[in-house]
Length: 472
Ligand code: XIL
Image 1 (cartoon, rainbow, N blue to C red):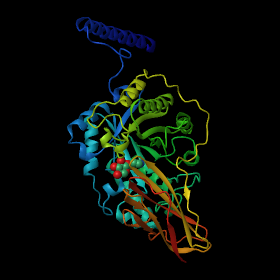
Image 2 (cartoon, rainbow, N blue to C red; image 1 turned 120 degrees about the vertical axis):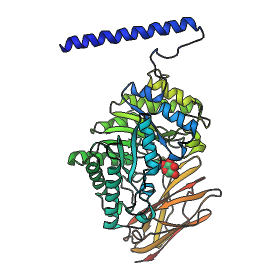
Image 3 (cartoon, protein in one colour; image 1 turned 180 degrees about the vertical axis):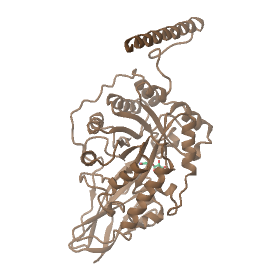
Image 4 (cartoon, protein in one colour; image 1 turned 90 degrees about the horizontal axis):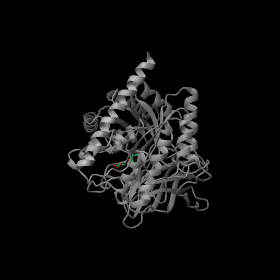
């Protein structure tokens, strides 16, 4: 019975294919100018091409751009997954404690539904883009507020989200393999699993992801995430997927072991997703990098899909690096064509990466400012920079005595500006700026350390000019 059914289906499929070919041949005969490239059944949009292998192709979307006809046209034509770029973040969805604001995120979800796309939720718990009220909480009050936030937002969107970035960017850059020191981390090392459990309870159907950057190859940071995922799987903490942001440029290119890294996470029993892809550059070099990333996903069975972080270069958070698939006018770039061809299995032959595991050093090694001898504190800075912007992490270390307050001074290069800071109170936004501790991280034990960070436009500072502290 089953066998007959299969045969009938097989026959009718091949008959259909015959009809299509007949029509196509007719079209060629009538319009001699028509040419075919690629295989006869190659899909012509990113979404359809990805779907041929059961994958999605997504983009980040900004609610305020939905009224732009060019933007909306490309969005609805090409993409089968949508991530709100900012609209589901904590500051956007809970501007005052326990008052929730979903209008902009709801508009994006409605657009996704209307075009038959799915939604990646981004991001429930993160040290950045927290509302001011949360930034000023600590300890149990912050832990409860965070869990309430996860529960409320995941409940609001229950059943509508393919995958949630439950926790974003919780590990430190560089070689330490440590957690990033943040107000959330300071509520206790188990904050990540608590967030995942709350998300599972609120929306059991959503896949729950851990998402991060600088984890795209094998290095100390991705090793630490790997160990966490392995531990969660062993202990039954709910986790279904790992997101690899994949923000690349010449200083931080696609790692040679990109595919191997995706594969080793997949082997832990999680789905892997490329969540925020953008690659600075232009022309063939950029197109080839997109091919490599796309091919790596296709080569890993558990790679569910690729999301690019915006549609046109001008929509990008780092627009000056022209990192996306469409130019500012909405025209397809070479990178679009190479991505599409790769999805269709007709890409230019960039071989799958089979490089054995290697340890990749951090892309921007920390610049250490030696402590003034006998100083109460010292500060070291590490930068994640791209064309036109940067994120800086500063590690503040106490000297031989415990300190109760601290302040770090540095000078931003001319033309650079501070846009936001976390885990510190900033004074000034250009030239000489200062960062003072906030309520929960002023106290540092003798020899201990804490971290704060900030984001800016322009070129990054390369050193701190001083650290001062009062002894505890
Ligand atoms: C970025 C947005 O694109 C910008 O509009 C916003 O100003 C800052 O955040 N990692 C993430 C994303 O997880 O949420 C960030 O998005 C880019 C880095």
